[in-house]
Image 1 (cartoon, rainbow, N blue to C red):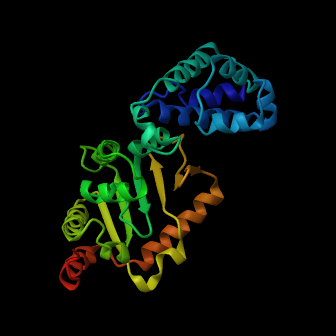
Image 2: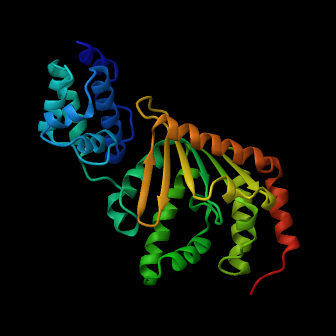
Amino acid sequence: MIGDRNAAEMSATGEGLDEDPALLRRVLGARLRRLREAAGIRGEAAGRAIRASHSKISRLEAGRVGFRAMDIDDLLTLYGVHDADTRAEYRQLARRANAVGRWQADADLTPPRLDTYLALEDAATLIRCYAPGLVPDLARTPSYAHTVFAIAHPEPTGEIQRRIELLMRRQHLLTRSDPPWVWFVIEAAALRRPIGGHEVWDAQLDHLADLAARPNITVQVLPDHVGGPAINETPFTLLRFAAPELSDLVHLPHATGAQFLDKRGDLDRHNAIWDRLCVCATPPEQTTELIDALRTTHSPTA
């Protein structure tokens, strides 16, 4: 059967992938979607096969929810996957995907589904970030981040410190032994905004210069006259993965949560926005010079 061949080719065990369950959920969901599409079955029919709705299939295929063994069995049967070993591999992957992830303990600090995003971020081979008005969180110093968190989330100092500790854990990917390629586009206006006072601001500029000097990190500055928010007024991150099962992903954070986009039209649109931002920004080799100029041309703020 077509389903059996595709399942074998996709190596349903997921071996060699990051073990974080949130990432495995997305891998398993992507593989189930490919099986469904190869079998020519619509989402509504797949939903009926597991006594659920089309939206449940969408959530499963996006890796947003856990997988019941009964649902996996019923979907594999519907998709024509009858080989016993292949079915066992899918059930094993589902068990691993349903485990508690290493990021879930911190999910109370952030919008829903953050554990999924953090696992994907940690597994990405290319991360591209644009955050109009502020320094992107992966590039923030602890002091700068503390000030931003205190403004955005007025809460006890202990909770803010937990947010900073979580951010520092995320930032470890920048300097680990196998780091991803990370690309930041930052507005010049954000770099002139002395959030936290001159000392915090100056340390943040130093940190950006240090990041820009790393071989796996590119930092570009978007001049004021370009009008970054006119190109795109909301922050976004583009993720790319080594695993062939995972398509590129757009992550859009907002006040009450976050949105993941992986449809071709959405990816094409955000890649076009990214290309325009990079073309309009100053070349990366000028970043350190621009940061030095900011220090000398703007007076300290008390």
